[in-house]
Length: 158
Image 1 (cartoon, helix red, strand yellow):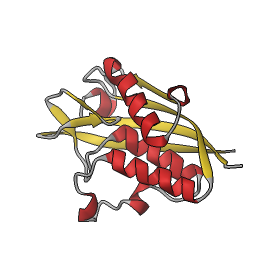
Image 2 (cartoon, helix red, strand yellow):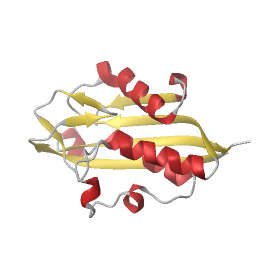
Image 3 (cartoon, helix red, strand yellow):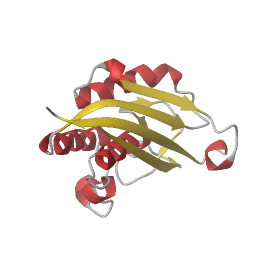
């Protein structure tokens, strides 16, 4: 068994869609980044890559490459799954935490879980997504950005 941890942060920006966990959420601002800036999927991807000792998303999907400009992060997560499969790993579970002050996303969490589970070929009960505010503290509390943390457990396929 191996564990991995992933953390991602993106600033909010005008004129961008807010996509978290593969779900487009109505908002005046979206997260800014080279890809679609899906902070949750980036943290999950980094956790999985780290558990398998395969580097991080910056190594596999550099923000200097036009190939990944505005790419849907579900595509990146699918590629991460293929890398783990190739190395002989099976994903056991994922637990993720979103940190953002607004908008409120509780009503979207189950859809996020379903997207991640479907993308990775997992049962829904193997994917946990939670959210919290930063109690108005720091860049998250000032609604300047959002962050996500994820941990995972993987094992070598028998």
